[in-house]
Image (cartoon, rainbow, N blue to C red; front, side, top):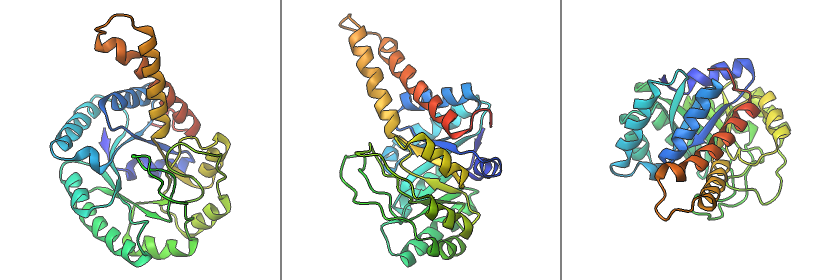
Length: 283
């Protein structure tokens, strides 16, 4: 059941839960994530970054997700996360992605609007949903480089951005950050409430890993319907790998012996997020 993001976020908005969006850049993450979502009867958004789709990798990703989603009776979204290059975003759309994000958060408001609208026009012509971003979510990138302090979304910019771009979902900055937190965050729910008043477009937060459960639940009650998660999966992956390495004594372990503890830890992490976000049995 490969769908675009509108098919799952509108329902979540109406029923006050959030759909988990997991970055699944290798097949081990992908299998554990979609298996766990199937077990929990949860819709799921499988996300990839531009670097995951270089050269022939795009054929591997799209063929794999399109092939397996036919056999899972849950809604599955194939989403490009943090796309910054229009030509790469359009390539993802052309090769079967059902949803994309254009990240112009580092640009001026006018340039962000102009670039986002270009992507929206192209995507909508192909029945693909688009996520835009206002404000900047700081923290660290995938190479562990510091991306600076977070800049909260200005609620006064929201109406202009949504109206002029036509985005299907809006990622907002309310106090989360990418990567592993160095200290516990405090989400600014007042800003979120102002944003919610300004638009009825489904709202997204990035940096969902490590965010305190009570704060995530409060954000969902105030209108968040998509939560991005990656660092928590990487932590679970390492925990499973460490466990596998200590359990196996033979010098030439079978791949299954190495993979099983990793899969178990990943599925446990995914199921915990699904329960937290309230998407269990919402497929």
